[in-house]
Length: 314
Image 1: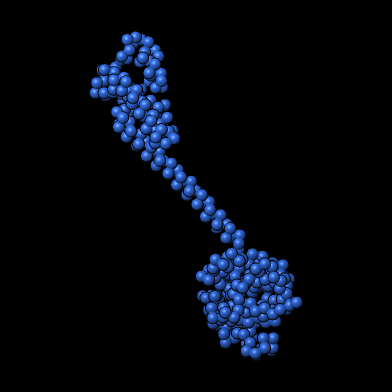
Image 2: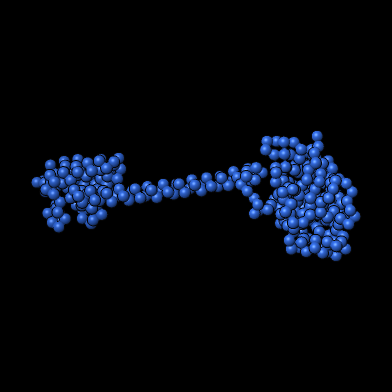
């Protein structure tokens, strides 16, 4: 079953070439791929419709009476020729107009300076099928009229403004229209945002871990001072022996604060049994205090564990 469709299309954003002397506007947009209310014109539909638009008469403004009735001769301004299809955009053609028409000068100016002020309004008979949220125009059966209309902004409520790759009215584009007609773009944008969020989350996690490591290091140094143990970054060999690299790693890897305090307290108790640590009295600790000094030198190393250290001085 066929039905009548009114469609509106302008040449906003198109590369319209004006030949004023010959009375030709080349490259005007005749029909787009999708309309505002969800009608979709597949490429094959436009391809089959090309002969119907070839030679179509163009009149000024909409008819005042029956849209299929005869038009006033004074309304006739030109004809559509050289119709071609662009799969990515729609139907395009050359509009041959009468350069002596009373509106020709105005038409030329608008085409050169404000093509959004001029558009074609179509009255066609077509077969339409609904697929999901879209109406698919399967075939255009007859082009009943093509009218040249002005000021499309005021006729938007009566006629659909066709939007395609080359003729989108960006100021009027909404999120719902994108979701309806270009869900692939929505998914592409959402995918990019998800990737940005993932990268930002990873960077934030790295910063969090870095801050946590710094806080743990500050806490360890504070607890070492609290328990009378030296800072391992000092130049004193004895300090580096008491808080060796392996002992420091074990402190960093402590599962919780309680375990951290316990490890430091045990090392401090061991030092207390040795007689304490006094950095100023460096000569006191310049050699082992064991009776058998040679035995201590051979068995105790700076990176030895606490147990080995105890055995060395016992």
